[in-house]
Length: 213
Image (cartoon, rainbow, N blue to C red):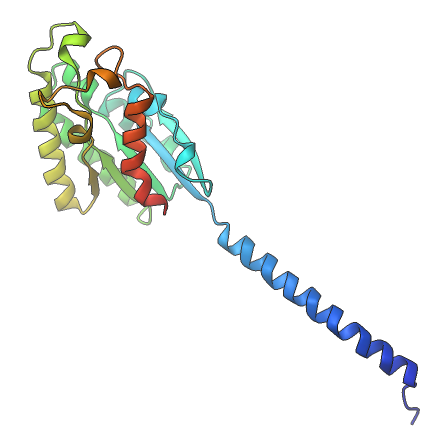
């Protein structure tokens, strides 16, 4: 039997620390890759969602904005398959104020929400649904006679909260943090009485931030 030369043994001993270092680096890289999991998040709703800049919520999430100006719950239902096809991890849903503007009953809006929730749950049982309440309006700044709209928004939100509890769906109240002492959208956070300025969206994003910690 031919024994290995002394030179070969020395070479092997010299390479061993390099091999161990290479394996350690590979393990670190694999760990970093595993921890760099990206959530797919869909922001679904009307112009409030459409205008929002959501990317700052997390560097480890892909935000897909499915907000469309002027839409109500029926529009959401009609295009819901597009959202479902993305198989998101989380869907944030905010819709209903345009329905109230079209003089729909709060119960109709809640029933529409339930249909949306049911369709998502059936297609994507692992997807988390988070319902955002309707936002307050500032009736004075808005200018068009919608006297009493905020009372209808609050009633709709109460009914949505109750329905979400039964369906075991998360509900986020945005009305309270965005309203002033007169139950109107804070005037400094809106320019038209309906849509938010940057400061209003800062409040909204802060309410969503726990989902990305």
